[in-house]
Length: 360
Ligand code: SF4
Image 1 (tube, rainbow, N blue to C red):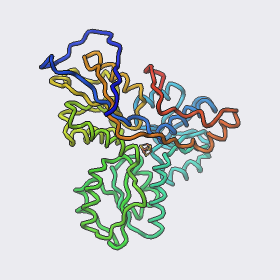
Image 2: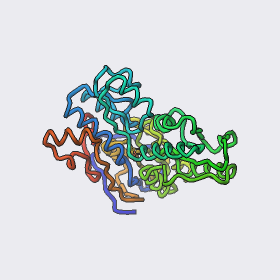
Image 3: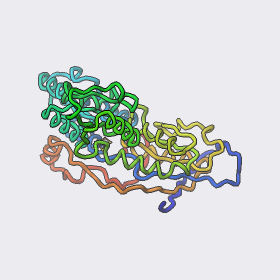
Image 4: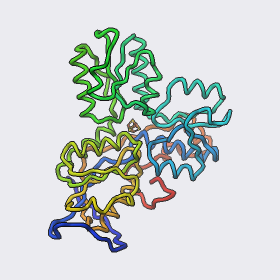
């Protein structure tokens, strides 16, 4: 554990349910948490597109799975659509960080849309693996959640070769054409432990099962889970800031409970926290999913400080400094507008303030 960072700003009197006034209250704050490189790139892409081209800018699906981010970008003029055919012919559309299948690119071309692809490069890496193994006529077992946009995009790269495996229990039903030629890939935002259990069972069934060339569960998902695992046994309650449709955020609650935290909840905003959750709680763990702006975590820390949880100790599992270059079209047009492309992305170490209207 590293140094304590006290949070301040007690502004109102609140009732704190507590069984023992002598027990010191504290917060363990996970690091890393919040924005990953892929989310940062996707959000900046929409922000810069609005600046460069003016509103409206269309975005297919939620640019990242976070309610606050989507609402804030909507206020600035982004229009979120479910499908490409909702975008007016010839208009500009941004594809979300979760990636799209080749069929979506084809449809955009048919409608003469100007596309900007904000797919996370680590998702694109999985797409390329799928194409490569399909070209080699492998059966690809894709571990992931049915209906998730990333899975739809990856599966769309090689629909005749990919079988979705959702859980360890699913393995019993999996069939392949040739057990000598089978590989597993995965969604980037899964629970590491559950995925490894699924793969263990797959390998029992198909001993020649090949691994992906490199980890598909991304660095950000893994690091956030490692930090939660380090804190979990010390926490009575884990508050994960994130949206219900955010896969990696939901996994953080599951990991906390699995590793010993008594109670855990996912909240979009501090005002969703229930005072009753604090009953008999001495230590609260706080973290956030990879699509969550830091300002929302600060609001949770303020909320907790107002209830006596002013001692905040960081639990650091890894340092992150990765930054992905913006999509080519945005870089080109920023340069043409005289902006320094290198300076437009977020500083991962910056401490944000404010809530509405600011993503940071
Ligand atoms: Fe990319 Fe991982 Fe972030 Fe998803 S969670 S956007 S795969 S870095």
